[in-house]
Amino acid sequence: MRPHVALALVAFAGASLAAEGAGATQITGRVRDASGRPVAGTMVSFSHGSPRHVVTVLTDEAGRYRTPPLDGPSPWSLRVRKPLFRDVQREGVMPAAQEQSALDVTLERETDPAEIAAQLPANRWFSLVLERIHDEAEREELVRQCAYCHQQGSRYTRLPRTEENWQKVLALMARMGGMIGPELRAALPSLFNETYDPKTAVPALVARLDEPGFVPEPAPEARRAVIEEWEMGIAASMQHDVAVHPDGSLWSVDQLQDRLTRLDPSVAGGAREVYEVPRGDLPLGGFTGGRAVLPPNANAHVGPHSLQMAPDGTIWLTLSFGNQIAGFDPKTKQWEIHPLDEGLYPHTLRFDSRGRIWFSVAVSNHLGMLDRKTGEVKTIRLPAASWSQELALRALPAFFWLARHVELGELPAGEGMSLPVPYGVDVAPDGGVWFSQLNQHRIGRIDPETLEIDMIDTPFTGPRRLRFDSKGQLWIPGFSSDLIARFDPKTRAFESWRLPTVPAGSETPYALNVDRRTDIVWICGTGSDSLLRFDPATQTFLTLPLPTRVTFTREIDFDDEGRVWTSNSNLPTWQVEGAYPRVIRVDWKPDAASPARAAAQ
Image 1 (cartoon, rainbow, N blue to C red):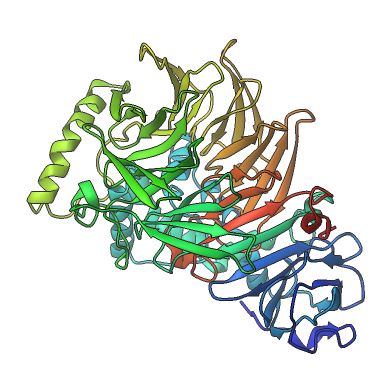
Image 2: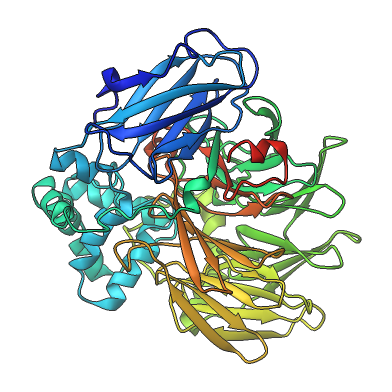
């Protein structure tokens, strides 16, 4: 990549940016190519501070852009990015102390095929691998297991490796639960090395460069979005999930550093407060006894994974490595810890109308419930697909006990069966608790009073984090099937829609959420550095490109103004552009609801 190319092409309109700024200033301008034509859909980003706060807007059909008021100490950094053009970057931008400043930018066309290919998101590269796998079951298995925690096809995952190093990677993957069958596992090293080799990959990726839609243009509505990113934690962090508090703050869990962080976005640059999650006497890796795959600089003993806001404003977390449910009172700064008597790796949690917490327990195939009034914790064992799975699941506690007390050596590289993984959880309007079993391609319902379980096979693969809309319809992302589905609990009918990501079949939607005020569905474009918006009324998608390369989104939430929040949780974090995790806020359609949002029009 050439990050500082074409700096001389940055043209300042007037002298309004020459002095150090004080107060909030909007920056407007135009982006044109070398011949003077407007460049629509360009991402124009201004960043400042440490940790960084980044504000990104997109240019309209005339190449015009306008930022919201940029409030914070100067100087700011500028980045202008558009696929098929060379990036423009500039340091030391100092908005003047006035309402508006103007800054025009000229972009040069990128002519190097290798540089054009490098600009494409990870899913475009990964699609080349999928094209070479002709067995449909193996292709699905690879998507589901090999993109479990990180983008596949990003700059670092496509590096060539020796056979020995590939086997180490596959062993680490197996220890994280990513089990690849022996035949596919044997083929992967040469498959990846050959497919990602620039000599073959670059010509394949740019073969249709001159065809319309090679890089899809953001729709006019998408170009009105204001995208803000705040760096959170450190390079060794993993900001796994986020949730919006009723007071407007954003809370995030750092799974690799055992921290809970509060972000106040109303403060210039974002005010951050960090709280250490109690660890007790748990060792590194918690119940795994160090068997979990942790980066060398990780410090996870309890591993906070997911969080939700209770009606009383307290924050509740699953502590995945600690086998605990934790509550934090932001007023008193006090913690409340509830251990699980049974089950391994509490995962996703949701509240029911009685204030009880329902949560998936991913490794041991349980569903759990915490009654906050009594402190009682229940775990319900979910059905396995076979007796061999059931035996393996029941043996897991003994295995991890041994791992803590006896040196078992290295685990085989991907040997073993694929076990059911209870993943997403949500509560229906009628009180029923629904969940997904990722590897088994099933969803299920549990009656909260009788604990009766009803399992349903999905007509697609990889159901992951699911959500109900205001009408009681259940929306489900197909992580390994490149679609979203709607399930009617009354008729038991499924309806599905393929995602619009290019090329078809290459997206990996980790999660979705439904804004119940509008029933608009928001989907993680986990493999393509994007967010997708689906309107069930018109059955249409809109795609918003996100400005940071390698953006692996995991959970979505909404604030009171309808803005969309998510996090960049690629593991390992160093693969993310800039090497720091970020939380992200998208104002999809600024309007007159507030002065700050109206200013972005």
